[in-house]
Length: 247
Image (cartoon, rainbow, N blue to C red; front, side):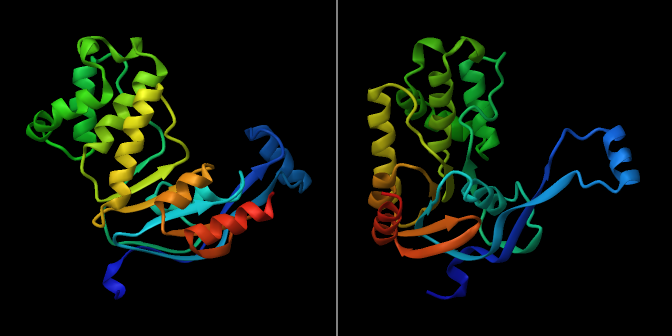
């Protein structure tokens, strides 16, 4: 593969947050200034990370809570900007961090399907062509005229995920689990992921605490520890070493 195959690249990326010891108010800031008191300390979420993701790769992020996985994904998406270093994106991609994102609670299920479709770059005709597939997947046919606010949390998640998975994105980013809904829906979601990870045209970057799923679906893995890359390589080997370390 050549350089043109790289769709995402981190070049010595560092992300630092300010961790305040107390709630910030104008009074406290002024008092800290005059008394030369330090109200905050730096929290290093990513520390000099170098990373490349090539078109068609399926890559997993491993790490304990607080290791920098979500910061990594949000920086990759452009939600967060690096404190230093550079992030290069050479392909349009869509993240899925929150299954309720984009839902308008007072609108009907049907209206939200078209709204979410537009959010994912689909015009009305595209949504109409995929409508039957989306409805069959979400299992929300009896509720098409119902305002979304009356759905259960699981039904809302199914609606958001159903539109997302039928939008046809080629570069996908997932954060954490998709284990919402009942067992029937989980089987549908599992079948979707099986097909997604077998499709060589799809590029996937994901994180989860389900190590078996990561080892099964991804060929490559990156282990983050305290914002640094501890190990990178074949997913099965990285997962095995990660499991052995915390056994």
